[in-house]
Every structure is written in C-alpha cells, then in structure tokens.
Length: 107
Image 1: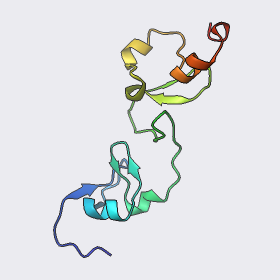
Image 2 (image 1 turned 45 degrees about the vertical axis):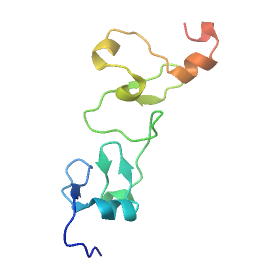
Image 3 (image 1 turned 135 degrees about the vertical axis):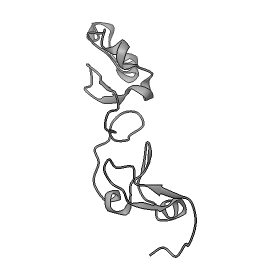
Image 4 (image 1 turned 180 degrees about the vertical axis):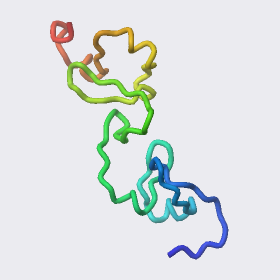
C-alpha cells in the first residue's frame, strides 16, 4: 500500500478506468507502461495483444495499418503512415517485408 502523502498523480491509461496512482509508485511497482501512460494495478496483469515495431497494444481510435505481406499490424505513427494517405493505397508492405521479400512477391 502506498504511504506517499503527495506527489504527481497519473490516471490509468486504459479507456474508461479512473484509477489514479503516484507516478513514483507506477515506476517502482513496475506497472505496465503503455504507449500513452501506465496501466493501473488492476489492468497491469491483463494480457494485452501487442503489435507493431514498438510491441505495444492498440489504443482506441488510433490508426493502424496491416502489412499485406506478413499480415502484422502497425501503428501509423510508428511507421510514418497517415490514415488519409493510406486510404488511397490498394496495398501496403512493411519495411521488414520490403527488405527481405523478392520483388515479384510484393507485386
């Protein structure tokens, strides 16, 4: 149990959760760090599917794009792809597949 009387408070970054905790406690208790904050003690133990080169989960409303070659999902912000541009493309290939695939495999 936390014995701090003061300190910077952060709110759990899981959508809909309102649990607040000290940033110091989050770091010292090794709460699961997410792309946009920390998950509280309640959500830190939940298994979250991870994606992308950053190996983080999906954040509600965040644009993601699927590689048409390996079928892995990527956060647009991690791979430099904007949603508006991607809407115009028929296919998209991630950097790893582009580097390792034969040219005729990507056509």
